Image (tube, rainbow, N blue to C red; front, side, top):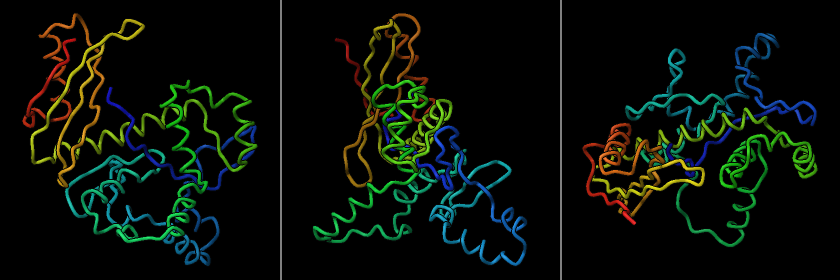
Length: 272
């Protein structure tokens, strides 16, 4: 399985119930049309204007196919599967990397100490998106069980810190991590497949403490801005001995899955 250590997805939640005994983890996903029907036509302009103000830059540059549940960039041919929780982080990341001129408010300017302080304070500002994203990172990086979020003492501690924090269930945390992984993998696939240069790989096989053999595959490449980059591409579960034949089959399968067979430059394997 590929690494999930990259940028994880953000999560769009609003109107959250903060009752510690009954947590609403899904948020308000009501469509404008539904709200209009409930409140009457006389509120239509007000409701539509409210949703216009919430429109993400991603939605301005992507079209949605509700039948296939996908987003397509209006500036190129890339298509992404829509996130189950409504997250647009993958779409934003695509715009920043491929159409950076379309992202407003991100121009490189010289800022003073006060501007930096304000920016840092804004980045640390509590939102349900930031909190949910930080939570899944903490669970992954510290190898926590998903059920840690259902512990009563854990819930109480968080509610003392911020009663607005919505605590998801273990099942939701698991789904969030899988979604973050899928979003990051999609972004990596796009970046590597669009690389005009060849990609180098380093391979390292080992056996875990519980006797499960893995092959770690790391990709190395130079970006369009001439930056040396690398990423853990795959943790492949090896079957059988660490023979040259088995390692070659595993490496070939990973390259095939990522559609990188024609982009291999050089690769090395740690034989120690």
